[in-house]
Image (cartoon, rainbow, N blue to C red; front, side, top):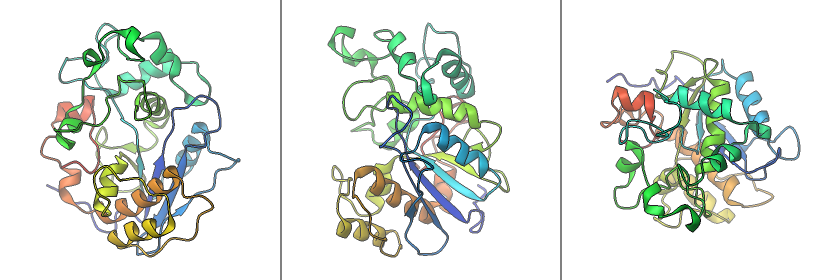
Length: 287
């Protein structure tokens, strides 16, 4: 087990993502911190709000920098359980083939993927009771089962409700397709000796490590944010204009990435086989 050198990364970025329609997204927030104890700060968007395309450009421009970058969407769909990501669709042998399939099937603006899901409604994706039994759509990746066998994260096939991750995840797969070959994406790529690395994050994991109780991961005030940052060996934050979930999730998770980066088990989880690494990926933070 090769550990990540303590000085491999000098910057840590967490991006709260969105699969919403449109070209400017209130729900996208990016926070960044350097090594040390300074609190993460929000990265201002080039326009009023971040677009997904603007995030892609920001990352491409920093591909050579020693950044660890976390995104809170699922980087792939379940594969191991059924031997396919989308049974009945053109076969996708690995996650990169799935990203390419999503990209080639979408013409939604700003890397959106809603049309991809709607065209497969009732066959792969659950939008409501008209699609049949919701239980028939509930399939999880191996890391999602490992993360919490009693209360699994939302599956990428469930496209209804406030907690659904389907739209954000498939929009994110279009982003990963654009970045593939330019920025290392773990665990599909090995961690290179230099340059940026992208990992999948689950902000609730960061919140629990920051002392937030299960079921109360969201932070909406300054005092609670500073308490969470203190658990992560970070100094208090600079005051925010708004203490919305997107901003505080990004800030806490950037601080968590800085503290968690040198944990060997996060880079070498026991359940991560070569097959899973290439087809389903893994959430950084799940041992």
